[in-house]
Length: 92
Image 1: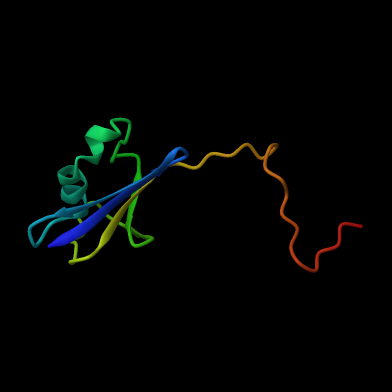
Image 2: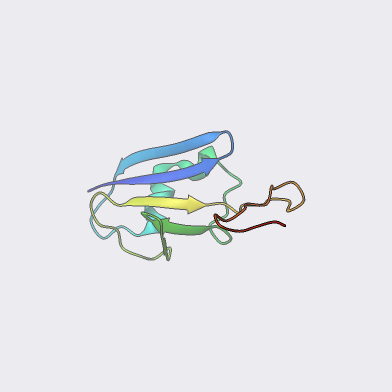
């Protein structure tokens, strides 16, 4: 079956389509895709993963057409991120 494996960094994103056997897990698909060799700093023990934007476990079984996503920690310095003003909020 065919599945996708996606990973994004500030410089761009990588999305690989691979052919895997039935009963393949999220972890097996990630390992099979070669993405861990391309991005050796990915640590599956630390990174969260998902399927089509929903959190998943590494041992979750995939279905044909699933997109496995590897999430990296997002860090932002609150002092440098502009405050978002909600519609209708007054700053008086």
